[in-house]
Image (tube, rainbow, N blue to C red; front, side, top):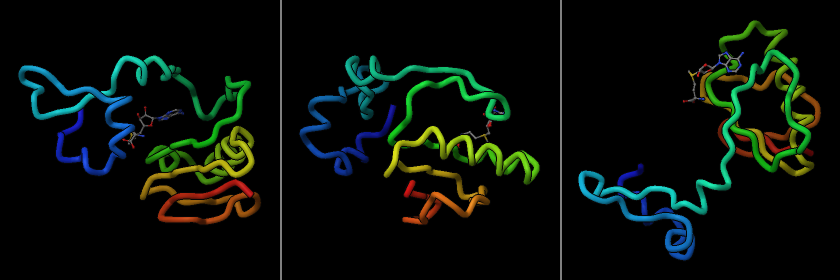
Length: 116
Ligand SMILES: C[S@@+](CC[C@H](N)C(=O)[O-])C[C@H]1O[C@@H](n2cnc3c(N)ncnc32)[C@H](O)[C@@H]1O
């Protein structure tokens, strides 16, 4: 659920296609519609273990997790995430995280990195 205040940030055609208005106590909110929800798959993974994905991703959000790990583990996880990205894909870290790998990613925004 997101407050309707954010609607102006969503292109009108996307809003119409993918989102629906909340009802009852959620009247001032929008929520992802069924079709958008059906595209989402939830998996519980351990970043310190093997990556259980065969596919590569356009974007990976890994926000405010890495800073829990010791530096050598942060590097291993970042290398694994880089492998899971498509060329030209984006890795988004959290404000508390730091990119520790130097090859393969370029800084394109605040905590946003693009695979070369
Ligand atoms: C501070 S929360 C950040 C949650 C969310 N990414 C955000 O930005 O709001 C840190 C999350 O890291 C998860 N976490 C800690 N160790 C992990 C690991 N080894 N593999 C995957 N997730 C882990 C915790 O379960 C927790 O949900």
